[in-house]
Length: 274
Image 1 (tube, rainbow, N blue to C red):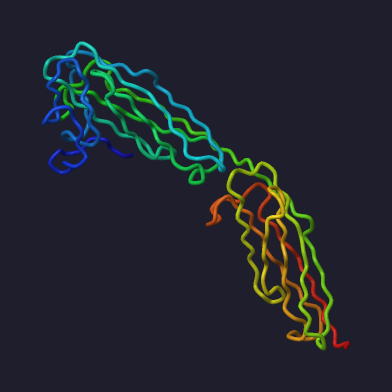
Image 2 (cartoon, rainbow, N blue to C red):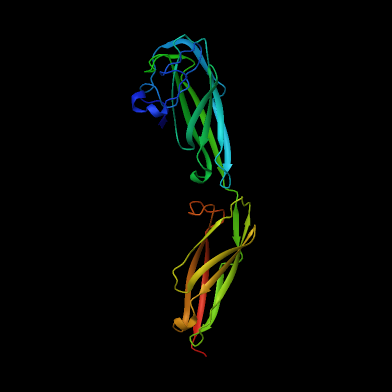
């Protein structure tokens, strides 16, 4: 879990308040701090005033072709004493990347929950808990009524892109007496693509296949070209190699699209015939 309140003297640059100290000078206003005041959370007796959240659940959804989403909620304090308040919070990080807030009006903090990039999260639904404590003292020994507040942040990830390949087997015939360049071709067909074209990552041993190149024919079609080792560099006989073709959402190939990877079985017959 990540915490949103640490010792002021250890984290001066992260303090944000409306006064020179960690406590607001304005009666009835909620302290607007991120990682600034006092030591960790705690229970303790309730203090005067109360606090309420606009919601206790934030739900977002995204796919691997989308940008990272955000969610929002607010916390409002009422009937505060002239001494002001302290705010402490922490959160899980299965799907949540960060939590930040601004004080748009006195007594209310508007929170923004920034979720992790979809590509960093497995397909499915993850839930995190954001715990907020609003206190009368910098040690959070005296929480106000309604504190602590627990907000559940739910993040649903989907994989929208699917790929198929025109064939999973290729063959070629060559002669040791003919130093001819030999290529073979296949086609990837895509549905559900996003604004960034998928990455094609071929994996091969170079026994038969010298290189594999890919080029976009259209938004939904990718041409594959298999450049074979020239037959005059091989012994006569039957040569075989399996080439793995991965189709991924990102350039590092952390997430394959649906249907990927593919295995291309390539058979290469080389003779001594001129």
